[in-house]
Image 1 (cartoon, rainbow over the protein chains, first blue to last red):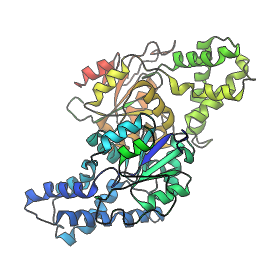
Image 2 (tube, helix red, strand yellow; image 1 turned 30 degrees about the horizontal axis):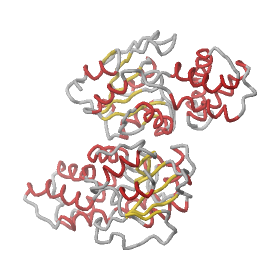
Image 3 (cartoon, one colour; image 1 turned 90 degrees about the vertical axis):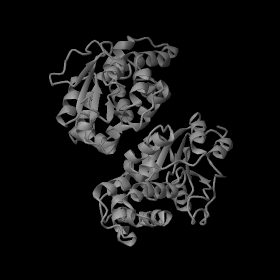
Image 4 (cartoon, each protein chain N blue to C red; image 1 turned 45 degrees about the vertical axis):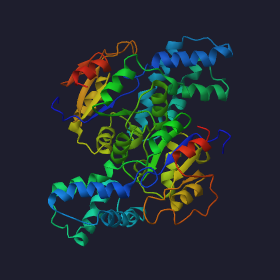
Length: 235
Length: 235
């Protein structure tokens, strides 16, 4: 793999590059506290995120057509509102909350790590997030992507093979010329099954569940952050 | 339009941002001269480009499924080879030639003009070129796109409405929040019909045909280059 055959690096985004839990908690607090609402903000973020896989599963199983993650985020939010006694929130606050996901901060290594990696590789997010969401996160965190790939290109969600294969194809590459980088075992397993190389990035602060499921497949790389990834790849 | 309602600028690429004619002629010469081939290089570029609209028309009319422009460029090339007595070119030279389109130079204003515009607007190519082609041209010319939109997202070619509408939708925008910038009347006409604002960029050196067909629709802006566009938009 270190023979120059890797041309592009693909990144999972939520958890791997950006801190969704801390960011959603912070944004929810800044939107809801002025409305005299007080919550366990991290529990709110966890509850919202817990609806993530079930929401996408309806699309992956073909029960509903592809919808942007922004749309699913709104539906997921509406589902958890009663649990936090928030069912009477004004619509403006709901819209603001939904877009909390566009304002998440990257982990501290990401800006420098990706800038370094970009000197040597094509870089793209291969996330389940839609294009506007990915573009806003890139702006917010000073990331320069070569293209935004992922769910929007394949009109399906990871870990469906079509998402990884469409990403490689968009760059005119074979799967074996691409390295999928993620903090989640299931994502790497699906990418490896499609023939991509895989790098595991440890993100112990993503959530209390982080890194508990360690990938069982052969990993091409296992690194602490994107700076170590750059070192390991000689970038 | 200058009231802050425009959020994204979409750019046509071939002719509007990059000099396809000079670039293809230069690349063809650098690939073919070492094979002791001499041609009218500009005539070769013009002949190749002349196959562009017919090739895409088969897709737009639904006669063949969507194919990347890289694939169409190769088919278009094979079509004109006999006319230039090039039918016996080695396969390596054909592959290199096909990718000449990935190495085109931008017009001199583009690097600075787009950097300035990006401080205020989301920027994306809305081209018929595929993602790898757009990503390589951006690298080659130091352009920082927020996303690569266009034909690959819509799986159809301009001037089909789906291409402009899919671009606006990818950024979560209404068509009226987007400004399509191009040197070609037909592109602007189709974008305006979809509800986008339109800016005409004069590119008199694109080809002998350049700017002969002046847009007859109401233009929001008409500028000499991307620097003037930045000035006009207060960026």
